[in-house]
Image 1: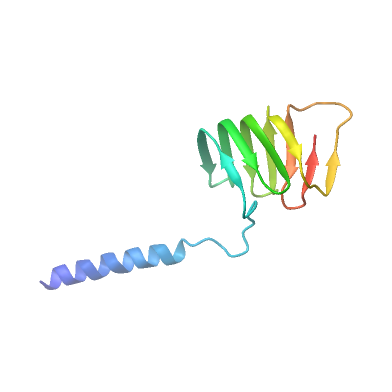
Image 2 (image 1 turned 135 degrees about the horizontal axis):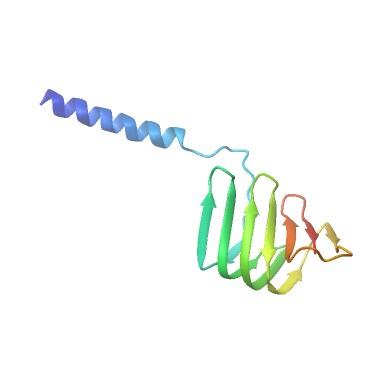
Length: 119
């Protein structure tokens, strides 16, 4: 009986401490509170702090919206999104919009922290 109580107490302590220490930091940057995003698949790389969305992606916020993107990579370190091959890209509200004179890349870069777009 004592063994059962000790094991139960140890497991309870383990689960409580795990949930207490695994909480996210309060100063972590969120993309937006009112985001509408759909994608076929989502992959998160915890080490690199990136999230990759693939397959028929639709995205809508107060700043930008688009449909049918093939791929999005969100980098939490730099607060940027790289948007690949999207349709109906609409800029609703942006602080700065920059267009490169020479189109080297096949993606649009959106910095959601500074609200800037590089086409």
